[in-house]
Structure formats: C-alpha cells, structure tokens
Length: 313
Ligand code: ADP
Ligand code: TRP
Image (cartoon, helix red, strand yellow):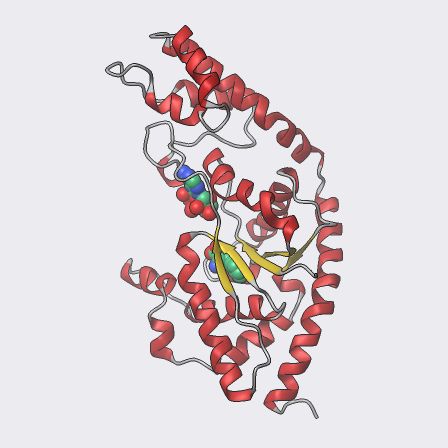
C-alpha cells in the first residue's frame, strides 16, 4: 500500500529553543517517515511581515539547517522552498477567487493583526488561500501543525470544497494532524518557554550558553525538589533515574542544575555538531533537488485545475 501524503510549512522562528524541539521538531521527526513527506519553507508567507531581504535569505537557510540537524533526511522527505515553485502562486489566486472577503476576515492571523493595530496587508489577508494552495497542490492527506494553525487547515478544506463543488471532485480534502508533543515545556522562570519571554534554553547553544540558561532557572526552596529543574529533566531521563538522582542530591539545587545542564548538553551536542557541518551550499543543493521533486507533482494538479477552469486551450 502506498504511503499517505504529508505536507507542512516551515516558518523560520529565529533561534530554536528546547521547547520548540520537544514540542514541534521531535514529534515531526518521529513520524515523517511513515508518510510521503513534503517540507515546504513558506518564504512567500514570510513576506507578509518581513521586509529585510538579507534576513529573508538567512531565515530560509537557517530553518532548513535546523530540520536537517535534528534528523530529517532530505532523501526521505521533499524539502523545498515555496517561492521555487510558482504553482503555489497560481493555485493561490484560483482559491482567492473561490472564497469571499467576509470569510477571509474571520481568519485569526488577520484579525489578530488588525486588533493589534498593525498593518494588515493584502498578502496577510489572503494568506490562508496561499496556504490552501500549498496543501492542495500535493494531494495532501495530512498536515501536521500546531494548534494555532487548525483554523488555517479548515480554511484550506473550505477552499478545496468550493473548488470541487464548482468544477468536480478534483482536489483532495486535507486534514490537520495535531502532533502529540510533550505538552508545554517550561522555561527558566517556570512559565511556557518562549522566545518572546526570554526564558529559553537554546537548542543549538554552546555548552556555556546552555549552562548559563540552566543556572538561571528559578528555584523554590519550599518543595522537596526544584520543580522547574525537575520538569525540564523529565524530558531527558526516566522518572526512575530521576528519583535516584534527586534523592541523592536533596537540597543541592546547584548540583542538580549542573547535572541538568550536562544532560542537555550531551543530548544536543550531536545535533549541534551536525548543524555546524551543514554549509549554505548543502542547503541550496537540498532545496534545488526538492524544488524539482515538488514541481513534478504540483504540475499534475495545476494542469488539472487549468483544464477544469477553462484556461488551458
Ligand atoms: P515561541 O513561543 O518561542 O515563539 P513558536 O511560537 O515559534 O515559539 O513555536 C514554534 C513551535 O514550537 C510550535 O509548534 C510550538 O507549539 C512549539 N513550541 C514553542 N514553545 C513551546 C514550549 N514551551 N513547549 C512545547 N512546544 C513549544
Ligand atoms: N502558516 C503556517 C505557520 O505559520 C506555515 C505554513 C504555510 C503551512 N503553508 C503551510 C503549514 C502549509 C502547513 C501547511 O506555521
């Protein structure tokens, strides 16, 4: 039986932290080989909020390096850049013509920006239809995304549904797949680890950077053990192992932090080393190969779409 098809879009979110790893990258690397997987760098989507061309280029390179470093094999997944395949723009436009303005006005990404008083450009407004095109071009079955993207997948279903009702059942209706992560990874202050909070432990940080972050974890001497240290430790060791360690070091929070730092360092070291070995040219080669493989498939869809809407003579 052939594998089901999976596609997801990657946005560069700057320097990754271990919350990103355990909440998003690890669950992805755990399942992607069970599918025929497509990983698309959503650079045209990034243009809705990014004006700096250098940063745009660097972000694309970085996010691919991140995924390669955590173990995605470019032979087993098609890794490509949205802007390398103009079929996305074309189907995006077709979908724009399928849905109404009031419908798009209900999309979170748009509503949130407007509520914050930020510029909501037309690209941001039609963003969900470009995303729908990303998905529909590859006859995608499942789309692994975070909870915040659930609505965008509904929008993709709606666009596909409208198209199919108008022109016949040509496009596949996708489903979201909310990955089973570890839940929320706490940061050094005990709150959700997040780059906007400045409470992160960097995934590809140096030994010193990791140590510095771990030593800053907020501890509370009231409990039996430092909860925030322990919570992060559970990502790396079994409860049985931790029971022994935490009993042996009762009250010695500094030592426990040092142990945690060295466990994190040992865990991330191979990924960090792998990332350092990947050159920009390696990434470009992966993307060039991915673009070819992606186009072979999307061409078939766009050809069907063109015929159906009556623009192929
Ligand atoms: P941040 O909150 O640092 O800005 P993003 O919003 O860019 O992180 O998240 C990127 C991915 O990492 C999302 O899939 C998100 O669910 C996951 N993620 C981010 N922070 C955590 C965390 N503390 N615990 C678990 N998963 C997380
Ligand atoms: N909008 C997604 C995000 O912000 C990224 C994305 C673009 C995407 N195209 C996609 C995700 C297609 C899944 C499928 O994270």
